Image (cartoon, rainbow, N blue to C red; front, side):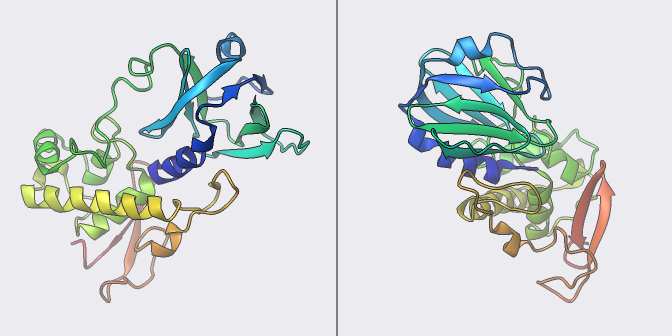
Length: 269
């Protein structure tokens, strides 16, 4: 599933289309996670793209009138083609036509979504989100204070989008390893020093992953078709029964909240 670094990579690759106009759009399948609104095509046609930003795992197109909110879901990706290209792939659900290019949204599992709205900040997908992990608002004091009443495990806690956005399954495992915190630990048991290390680890892991274009394990490819290379930096994720890269311990795989979770039996006691 594309996580924050993959979405950031996609958003950055779309920047050349800022100041361009969406001439028209074709929708081949309206039945994504939420059915695409019947007036979507009319609302965005002939609208200029003022900016393209990211909020959590959502890509937001700020148009001359209104906003497009796009979520890649479990298997979604975007690719760019020349306007005169006839290449079509199965699961190409939405095609945006610009002056000389096409922006194509492809999603095998159809868990992604796309919406038009006049107010992105108050949209139901956006308005209740927590702080961005790379922002100053996500800090030791914030994490410690908000964690005091939580009795869930710490991995599930940092993956809660109301706590902090964009820390998906891969990066949660990697950040907890980097901070030397066991993913099973109950959240309100972690102390301020734990919070300090964890905030620092989340920021560092995400920054490195963004710089490397994200992580390609199965479905994610950037707009230009290239893979993300953070997978070569993975310390625990996907390394069940392998030797820890920091000690002689063994990487264990467990399932927390229906998600595969990896940690070192020695480093994260």
